Structure formats: structure tokens, C-alpha cells
Length: 214
Image 1 (cartoon, rainbow, N blue to C red):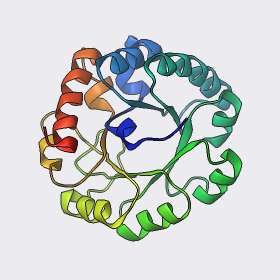
Image 2: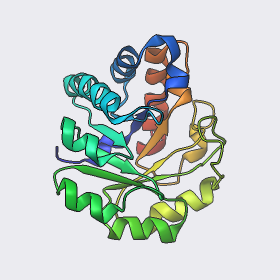
Image 3: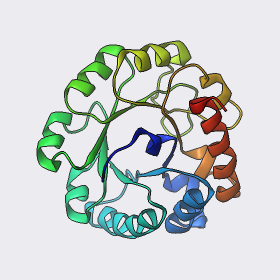
């Protein structure tokens, strides 16, 4: 898949605890139908067989909407399923190694919370950076705040796009205006919502306003 930073506008990250009884496939399709532009499968407790099954089913859904499917932390699942890419944290596989394994046709994202780490990720072959936690987050208890000023510093220091992550919701997206982000990543604000579709619609409009200036 040819990577375009517009794909990052509303970055939906799955979370089993948030999704609950709504179901993974149903929730992801509702998110895409409402305006999500990219999906990351994040299921920390799942083994590789389960992840592959989930990825196979989500890939079919994502393809119908023209949205990339990214796998959290696991390049092997990308190879086994044909998913569009992988997102790697600081404690995961080295970005350069992932690029060697996956080649240039796959999307690789990296997490960074400082300018130095972000530049290192860019030099190692990352296509985009996930930067946070910008606000408070319910999904990562160890996440530390970076604030919007550092987010802007990271964005302006790189030539690759940056996605804001960490506690982003409809009530605070407007605070990201002027940070020069290319997207917002949402977890609980989307998949924890009573109606995933309408939440995606609202978040998509708000994200576009921040990214593209209305």
C-alpha cells in the first residue's frame, strides 16, 4: 500500500476492554463507516494465532473502506496475514530491523515522546510517529504527559507525519490546533463510546478541523 499522511487523520486503535460485548469486527466497521481512516489492531493479551485470526477478519473490513490495517508490536503477524504495517514502541523490535523484514512496501510507525527519539525513529525508517501521551489516558497506566508544546516541537523537527495519542477525545482535540499534527489516535473515546459510528463521525470532523484548519 502506498502510504499517504492523510491516512492518519483519524487513527482508530482497538482495545478489548473498551469494545466489550460490542465485538471487535462490528466496532471496527462502525468506526470506519463513521470516518476512521486507519486501524491499529492492539490486543496485548492475545497469542499469535488469535492475532492472526483477528487481523485476517479486520483486513477484509479495512480493505472495503480503503483503510490500512496496522498491527501493534508484531511484525510476524504482518508477514503472516498481509496486513499493511506495524507500529512499534520503544521497547519493541528495532525499527530498522522491522524495515529489513517487511520491506519498503509496508507502513511502519514508531512511538516517541522526545525530539531525540522521534528523530532516531525517522532515521531508522519510520513512516510516521505516534507521539504522547498528550493528555491523560485510561488505556496505558504508565503513560506520561508530554503536553502540546513538546508535541509541536516534535512535529516541527521531523519531515515525517506525527499522530497525537493519549487521552484524545472530542472535548480536547481543539487544544491540538497549531501543533502541526497529521492525525489523532483514539482508543476509549471511540471504542468505549456507546455508539461507535456517531463518535467516529464527530471525531473525524473535529480532527479534520485541527489538521486542515476547518
